[in-house]
Amino acid sequence: MSTEQTFIAVKPDGVQRGLVGEIIGRFERRGYKLAAIKLVTPSKEHLEKHYEDLKGKPFFPGLISYMASGPVCAMVWEGREACKVGRQLLGATNPMASQPGTIRGDFAIDVGRNVCHGSDGVDSAKKEIDLWFKKEEINSWKKADESWVYEN
Image (tube, rainbow, N blue to C red; front, side):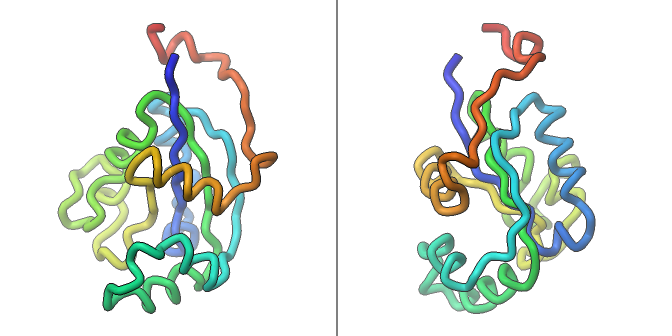
């Protein structure tokens, strides 16, 4: 079975609102495997690396300030098409464009408080995972229900 990993982070608004368990539950119920998790308040420097592709945008300083304002629940999820499906579970970046049933569609209104971040592809996931986790923090294990999630 070909699997990939994705980086998912519950942002400070999601942590403050007590949504971490709900978000974990949605990924688990879909069949994805949690490979790493930690609660961290990231530094400004760390966030500037994470969001370096947005550096020229007018909202960049506010984004960095907001993301450094409290704890972030950083996670690595693993499974078939984890990046693509992870983004589907999260919903559109703008919560007002997110479908009901998605995390953002159910729990967010403003784009600046959209509850979570998800890697937009395999390459960005690798980069983000390497930025947020040491290799030894990522667990490799076989889920007991794997044969009930995947046909082959």
